[in-house]
Image (cartoon, rainbow, N blue to C red; front, side, top):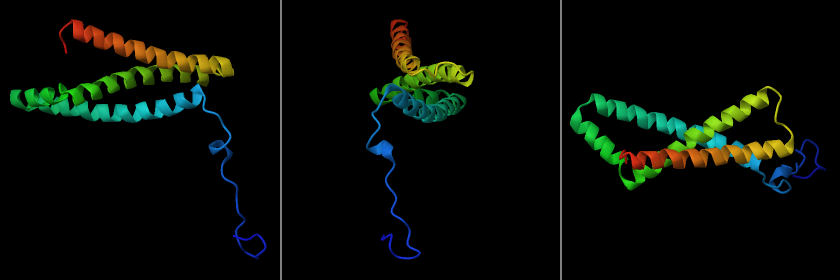
Length: 136
């Protein structure tokens, strides 16, 4: 659109974040927090399906848990475990931010790495315990 024509809209530049900003851990953490929140909604539907299968009798329950025990089902459950732990850690991090603490860039980066690290370690520990106790 030409700026010289009366009534024509002016051309606007693209948002600079697409070209200028470098990715950093707090950006990843924000995106991961949203993604894990969505994943937890899916997990709630899976949990509701489990409850319906449980209430529907032994055959339905065996079929549902059998589906969850497939490689794809286990991968989804692994992702949900990570999502639960990450969303928990990010929620605690946000509580500190709500209190006005932790905004220093170095501390924000550190807590972002810590939240991801906690989620990974807690997920691995949970699945290791499940494996050692025969739950898997």
